[in-house]
Structures are given as C-alpha cells and as structure tokens.
Length: 173
Image (tube, rainbow, N blue to C red; front, side):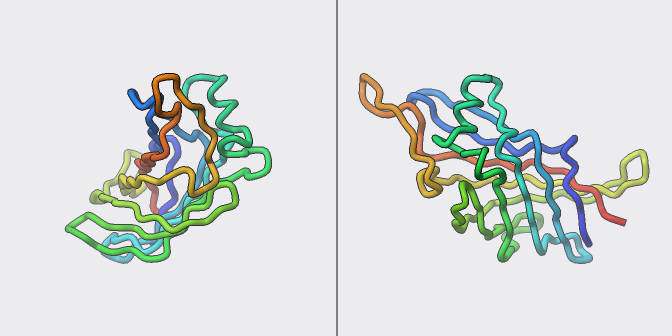
C-alpha cells in the first residue's frame, strides 16, 4: 500500500542549541514523501524530499543565513532527502527506520525512531495514517560547520540537531 504525505497536516522540524543555553526550532515548509506499508499497515519503505530553501525559523535574517553556503547551500543543493534502507519493528506500533539522509550532497546513514498510529477515515472518505519519527544528527557530518566562538566559551550553534517528522499520509487509491 502506498501513502502520500499530506503537507497540510504534517510538519518536518528541527531543533538546535543556541549559545549553549536555549533551543532554536525551525521547520521546512515545502516537502513531499511517500510511505509504503504491508497489509497490516506496517511501514516497508519511506521516502522524503525537502526543499532546502523552504527552511523557516520565524526570523528572516536567520533563515537567509540558513539558506546560504554556511548551512544548507540552498542555491546549489536544492533538496534534502531521506530514503529508508530497512525498517525494524521494535514494538506494537514502534519502529526503527534505517536509511540514508542526504544534505549538501553528502549522504550518511541515520536511524529514525518512529511510532505509527492506526488508520482512520476523514470526512471526505480518504484513509489516513500518521507517524512521528525522530533522530539526532551531528550537522558537521554533512559539512555544516559554520559557527562563532562565544566570549564566555563555547559556540553559537550546537553540533547536535534533533530532526522530527510528524506526518499524516493519505492512502493512494
């Protein structure tokens, strides 16, 4: 069974430490993806493509910097992608989704911890399913190394970035 991610009922977000004291959160506004499941709605394949230029933290100046070559290099590396390579069931509706994450043209393996829901029908007759998946990556492994030293020690932007995919998907008829 194939399901298309519904962007109007989904969010792909990230969180990173700022000045080592607080967390800055953001999301990507433009993306698409598919989830394939077996007959019991267990995921068998996940594929997501994100438009790098759609990054949004609520601050135009910061968003412009994130689109630059210092971070996502959105002009030449237009997309971030995730493609699953294997999926391991770890509980009733819990999974570890192993796959390849590509950012800035660099592909590295990651493991997403995911929890799925049961299916449901919306008022228009569409069958829907939802899932939340998270992982933490070291951004420097994707050549996102820009930073600034702080006067009191430490750095402006943390290395670890928590990624969260909170998605709802519609069954393709």
